[in-house]
Length: 239
Image (cartoon, rainbow, N blue to C red):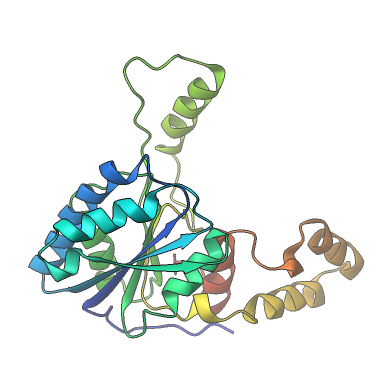
């Protein structure tokens, strides 16, 4: 079921923003997005940005409208669409509008390094077997933050992670796909689960695990869905 891909990523880049109640974070995020778009354009990329509001109840849409009203560069204007609640619904809605393009998704509670998206696109270009490239997140804590056990745990986790080998599993805060095919294949996860049961030494236990994790109810997050589908199609090293 592996299907290696050796195509060069498209110079057309669609940037998808799944948004749900991000009004408090958009004013910080959007300028960093603009810096990334400028770098992509400088390298000859055509850029389109699509935001999908999924169950938003705050004034995120009004902030996007305000942003669009101040932009003269068409590549900085954000197309606004809506989907049913849930990040995966938003991601799929955006993917349907991204044929013949490299496709980036970004959680809008981050601040991007200015060359983040350009480096992801460059990684796909230099490594033809890679189907998804993702960025590492680094938490930034306010200087006056109260040091709670949870904050301490986060600091320890990210400090330890820096010394670990990078995993072949998608981290979904900021990533870029070579194409939109995996997002639109809703039946492939069923084939993966059927194959898992067929290969298992104990099919009953395998089915019980699938039932307990509710895997046949559909992907629980875009990270898991894309990781399973991509690895099954293209093998280790494709993420």
